[in-house]
Amino acid sequence: MVEVDRARQHVKEAAKEHEQQSRELRRRYEALASERDDLRHNLFEARADLKTAAAVREQLEERLRAATERASIAAATSKQAHPSKPSRRSTNRQRTRASE
Image (cartoon, rainbow, N blue to C red):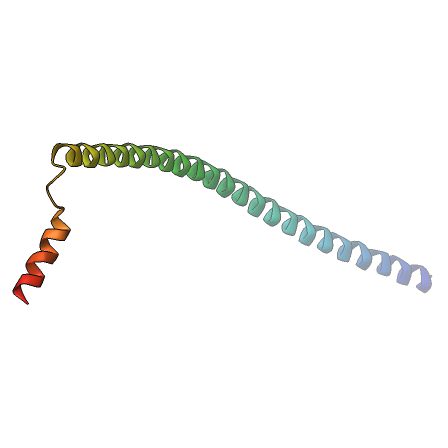
């Protein structure tokens, strides 16, 4: 009878340990699932931010291209209107040399 009682006690302890391990695994699973959900949410936000940044970049690049074209056209028009007029830079150099 003592042997049966020991076996029952052993089974009882094993079941208790098993239940504790199951609870711990469940707790770890829930923590990992929660972390996964947070990371997934952060990933979606990062992708949305990236799409927004790409759209803004594209708009800014288009504005820069347009501004560069306008400046190029203005410079070409200015040179055609005043072909004999020296550039400001060369005029400044001449003044600097004259004052030396």
